[in-house]
Length: 147
Image (cartoon, rainbow, N blue to C red; front, top):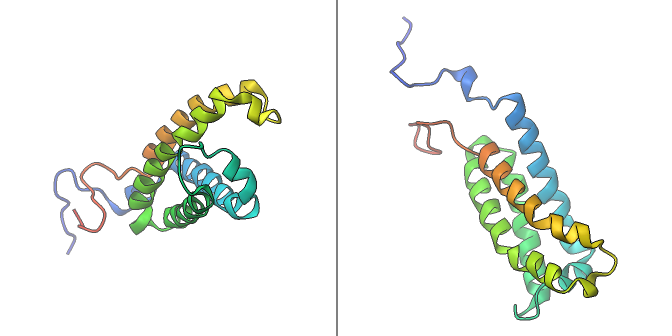
């Protein structure tokens, strides 16, 4: 006996992210996976962009690297994708002071072209939009509730 769908209920095929969302998820995953690894491979370089008013730059770099890797891993599984997206969104907001610091003190980052420093903030805004869109839950579906 076939069960009748309730109004607004999604069929199983619609729960699979579309091609655009899969590409978006791939970009977000690679961004944070590679970035997270960089926190451990190039710790000294990452520490240079931590503004001087933020204490314990070494610890901050390592902890944020762990969270980037955990967030990237969380994107891979549908049940954790939304939570990972929220975490990566908040983490991306939390690194804003580093982008602003680099823009305010470009002489400390001579190896980075000034145009790239300017471009970082709009790219960060675009990344925030991509994280929110690619990890969003279809309307009426909330992770872990079955509704």
